[in-house]
Length: 138
Image 1 (cartoon, one colour):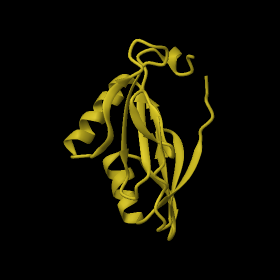
Image 2: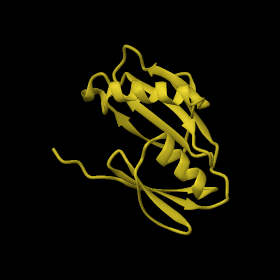
Image 3: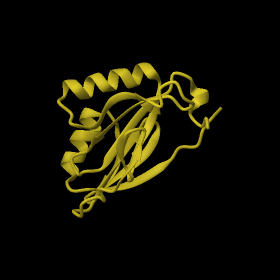
Image 4: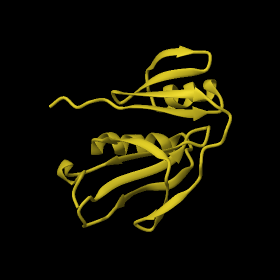
C-alpha cells in the first residue's frame, strides 16, 4: 500500500547547523533550498528547516513516566533501523531528552522510543514497534 507523505516546516536558528544535523548526523538527503530555508528527505517525507531565530516552545506532558515535549516530530522506523539509530546517536554523543527505552511495556502500543533536540531546540522522536499492528492500538 502506498502511503501519503507528510510535509513539515519548522524553525531553526542556523541553516548550516541544520544541514550538519539533518544531512550529516541523521543522513537526510538535501533537496531544494533558498537563503532562508532548506528541504530534507526525512525517511521519504519532506521536512523544511526555515531560518527563524525564535526559540521553540518547551511545554511537556507526562507520558508513561516521562516528560514528553508537546511540540515534536519524528518517524516510526523498523526495529532494526531504530536500534541502529539509537547506537549511532549514542556514539555521536547525542544528549537525549528521553533515553532510548521501551514505552508501554506489555501494553497495547508497546514501542521503542527516544527523544533528542536538534541544534535549534526542536524535539525529535524516533520510535519503532515490534508489531506494526500496535501503532494505533487502544
